[in-house]
Amino acid sequence: MMVLEIAIWGAWLPLIFGYLPSLGFSSTQTALILNAFPVAAVIGMFFSNQFADRNFAAERFLAFSHLVGGLAILGCGYVKTFQPFFWLMLIHCLLYVPTLSITNSIAFANMKDPQKEFGIIRMGGTVGWILAAWPFTFILVDWAKVDAAHPKSLYAWFDVVLKSGLTGQELQAATKWTFVVAGVLSLALAAFSLALPHTPPKKKEEGAAESLAWLEAVRLLKHPFVLVLWLVTFVDSFVHNCYFNWTGSFLGADPAKGGVGIPGNWIMPVMTIGQVAELLTMLILGVTLKKLGWRMTMILGILGHGARFAVYAFFPQSRELIIAVQILHGICYAFFFATVYIFVDAYFPKDVRSSAQGLFNVMILGIGALVANSICPRLIQDTFTHDGVTDFKHLFLVPCYAAIFAMLLLAVAFHPPKAVEAAGGLKGAPH
Image 1 (cartoon, rainbow, N blue to C red):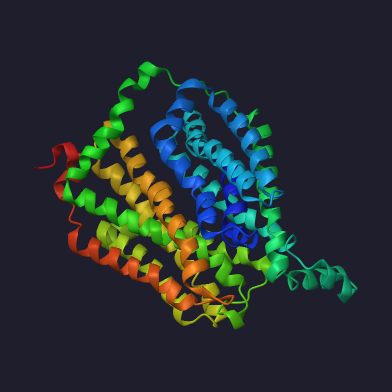
Image 2: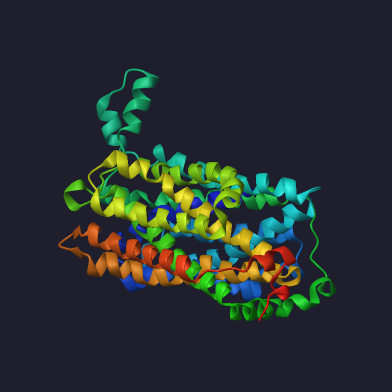
């Protein structure tokens, strides 16, 4: 379930940022389409997640959402004009985002020991994102070049295929297959959902107080260290989404135009190096937190963003270094975002802990992404691209400097009181 759930997202997201301008969409139209997901994330926090949880059996809601949402994202592969693309993407996102929490609900309802089992189950999502990229090594291929090579053996055929990735306009046109693959995966999960254990809706009286729990979580922003972390999370989410907005286009762009020149069928697999690193980094996160503490671990996560964008800006012609630096993406995610979730679990009162996670989630998946998806298309299409050539150096310095600012803010102003964690939450915090 988790493999398929996240594979859907991982199939269409990495290459959409370069695909939309190739359809002739303006930077404003591109931003509107990209913001369908963060808008759905914000709506999900305040309405749709709870509505689905309370009114439908989880596995049936999952089946319905992935059936309709799968058909919508499938349609994105075949429409070429703005309005139908926008509405199809919005339908998909509004139905998909609640399933991120619904799959968690199904998992928790059917595990014997969630503390031991959930980490392994959730790891399936990261594996799904990685697996979603690899079919494209055989989809985004220049088959005319393969035929012209007349490979004599199976080994020779594989060798030619893997070296014949699409580039330029041909790559942009073939990107429609990312939406087709996402749609097929979604429909597969819709069918598989019917075989999942029955998970009935939660009764209203079980969580009647939860409707206002997010207000309690918001009130905790009165504590300076919580507010600082919330603002740093916003900046880091912005920087994180700059990576997704620009990396695919940067990796695939011609070196003569400032890019790296990686063949189209290898762009997504190269980007998954970050997810592999994430799996490995999560294994050492507990030890790192004990050795370095909350603040230094988070600082390293933010610095990873800055270092990666600095490499992008100053060493764009070093293909091997650009590929190697993808490792930092996993370190950035584990050392900052995963650490934030663990920190919230340690410092927030138990009765509002779930809503507190949602409060930070709305920054990570919602507001931070919303701002990035609104600004990034304008920066790359209108500000830093002239005569078809993008000034990637100065483009990448924007998130690099933003990461440095977030790191300094965290280093100077983030001072969580140790007594609060020991007391089991902020209710024991001094005023």
